[in-house]
Image 1 (cartoon, rainbow, N blue to C red):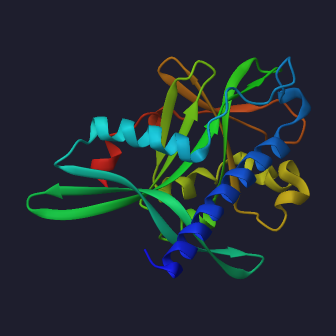
Image 2 (image 1 turned 30 degrees about the horizontal axis):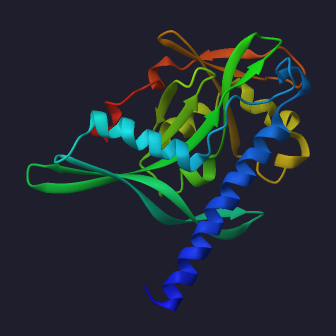
Length: 233
């Protein structure tokens, strides 16, 4: 490895560290007072995005083993629009290569992770995910995977295609998005927030239609642990 390659690798590692830091700060900023646990702790035993991605890789490999599949973490440069200007960044994504009928194909998964937090008012455990719809619909990804680790250390995974994310934003809660997220998100009207909850074999999204109002519920079981979609793309 030459000097320039070392510099590039170091910069990429710094970007990943910054991503994790920003993710944690954003989650803390969006939790309201009535969404704190009794002891004042927002999240369970924290797991970083990189750690969670490695756990997701293990689980994916159980469902899609070698030699028919190869699952790995790769670095990918993506372009997003921020304040009307293009912004490029390098992020870690999951790539699944498929070797079927002597033909190789690959899909790229956008990875999001959340440690769950407890909502006192609703008395439920949720995993909060923030996603940029413009980025998802920009053609960089074939699938989005949302990883959620509960207070018992169990993992659940939600799978959504880019088109499903685009359709998902159109129901009633989108009408109040700016009011709910306020000034932090005013320059990013296409941000979407999921508050996933798993009860047995059912899954739900708890969302706000109006600030400080009771949360509404949308069933999202069809996206829960939907491993088969990987071979359907």
